Length: 479
Image (cartoon, rainbow, N blue to C red; front, side, top):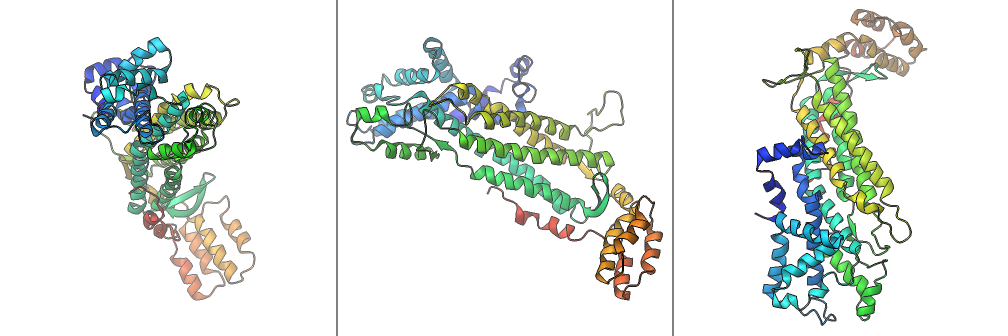
């Protein structure tokens, strides 16, 4: 049982969990816990403490490998294994011990330092260098790397895979419904036909673009001391190239080094990251609302589950609750993500503490995002195309063929084609017979007229099917 599974293990007492969920302030920790709990090991208080421990221990190990720091000689294999064991075996009990120390220190990072000193005082090799825990560090050196690692793990292990699953689900719809014709609606009015699959392909591609931007965002870290100048480092060891050491240390954690900082890493990468997630969420809201409308129009039926109730008073109803739930949670997430993006890059002079309390809320924003993705995926799994309703909608709107008719008329020099079709169709009920009679009277080459006569609202879909079938080529997903 590794430390990364501790939070999941804590959820095994289902009755106790259900009881405690009734008193939580956030539904993420109560009603929706089962859908978001995989984020807990990264973005919870436990996750923050864990990564602080990881950073502090790795910094001590780094110091032991710098020849000029003679006071911290190279550790034996046994000592290194012991230190790594503290990280790998970090438990809820360990985190509680840190919190116990914090009640005395009233400083969360200092509590981690004292915890590590206690854990290592019985190991002779490490006991000799206890004061090199947190050497030359400001708390933000530890915190910014911890927050970066929290985001790196949460996004890489949970958010991106959920995005991929969602995008793949929509792409499957695109290919499955590539040839299913559907009446478009622009401004809510009947417009040129498309296919249901092509409309799904658009969302898959839009979402995959944002997914790519998110994956490409560099998660950064600093390790430059109290105001970003390595003041304390140089005062102790003036002959060491500390910027180079800091870069090696930060990149060894899988992060991108930021050399120009104040006391804090300025969080510009976080703003970029949160803005990208927010844009992904906005596109998904667009999808949720379109699907909601398609369900309302009868284009989709929803597969029912035995025992489930759609409405407390109207037994016939099957509400599009998954897409509504998704939309609501994405809105909640975006409110927080937008705030993060606007607030976090701003810090008075060389540092103020307003970012500290804000960063503790990352789990909420990403949790509501994850819940939105999972709700949409669940809703997609219940959808069943109602081809009869789609066909009926097309049959009722033959006027949409005014576009191809007037376009062909333009090609062959028929005067005022747009005006003639406008007179024929605007504000009038137009059926197949009226359209065909109009085409037959046109002064067009016989082959052009023949092609127009073959058109129906069902076949006038252009390259929609081909675009839908090629959707996979346009996606940017993880491998």
